[in-house]
Image 1: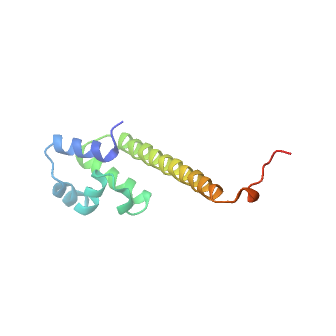
Image 2: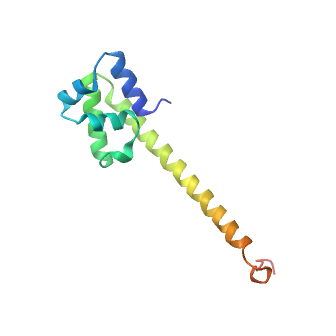
Length: 112
């Protein structure tokens, strides 16, 4: 599935609308709209604000608001899952390194 930012940018460009036009109509700064189109959600305020920005953006372009919000929520869920998986891998790698540095006499087995 296309990311929310890619989707919004593609739809905006296909209609020949500039970010400045959307900014003027919605009162959302161009920098914030650019961050949305780049999927740079860390540079934006909290999720409820982002959803409001996406809603205003969609309404201005005549897009399906629910579709865009579902794309955003799916993207954020996927991003969170990726970050969690990366953190788990890092934890496992750290555990392996720490265990490898222990002298054999310090490593105990759970087998009895």
